Length: 426
Image 1 (cartoon, rainbow, N blue to C red):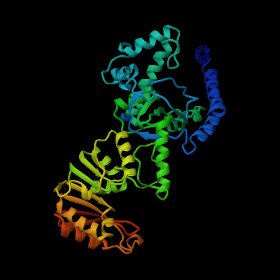
Image 2: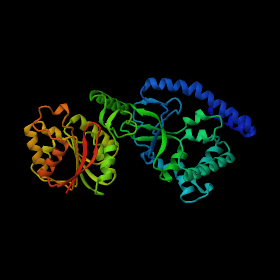
Image 3: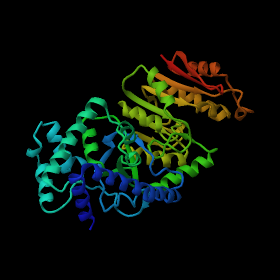
Image 4: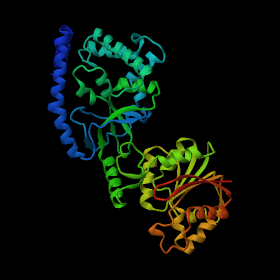
């Protein structure tokens, strides 16, 4: 029935171009106002703090696999689904669509010489409507549109459907706004392609850094993990200490995001080497440094932070080492050889008691490094009342230089609350 209706509408559009086009536009309006609008409302009730039609910009290389199961592109928007659907399915790069578009634009083949052409034509001759085409002539017109789309993206860059609708308004603005590439999120944050194959294939072939997508559905275990992070944020004064580094988790409030990493990256003198992050929290800095070629080691004693760090590391396919213990117990009494030491807002906790103060001095003496990025506290903070030692930022830096292999420093930034970020080097 659905297939016959599609054919009827396509035939009307071909025979009466103006009337047929207006009819299609009218039906899209009906679908938006009487289907998508109510769907949006009910989807919010299922996943109340997420906009079902929110657009995210991500690197297309993150979409590896096609959805492994049956979906309804209308009814499944905003749903939370259990089951094994997120187990690895067919790789997107192995699909006929991707291979056909690659053959066309990378190998410079004619459409008629691609496997995509022969396979789609076979389905059409078998009576199916494929990509809105029910005749070979219609299919050829569709391929010309793909040519045009490729050339447009290659020359002008990738535009969101909302941008396209505003530039080429044909009465279907609302529909266009919700017509982005669709993906589903599996239990471990992996992305599964649902809809928009032509655009995704072109984006991958052109190696675009970012494209807009929408999320069709999420695995229940992924939602449970996100809810755990939200609860943790509530338990830690309403915010996570670090950004949870996955685009679908970025809406959870956090204190430190990319700013500190960018400051350090812009001031570091090395292009590679070994990094140790003392008090790594969720491992965000290790995640970022690994992406630019460093080997990273994250030291964190808090088991709750380690739990989330391990999940986030695996979600992002990172390889950095996680050490769940006090930095004082890490390779105890051994020399610690690292090119870069990250000690951001952590050392002042060791000033509060005499025992940890002495341990800090021992640690500094066995650290062999080229650079240290040190985040100091504000010595007027109430938490330091009654501390064994309470240095000003400048005094603290000089204390570190006196007890380490480093001998010079520069102030990178002073924050509004009085905390500072320094670079120490030899």
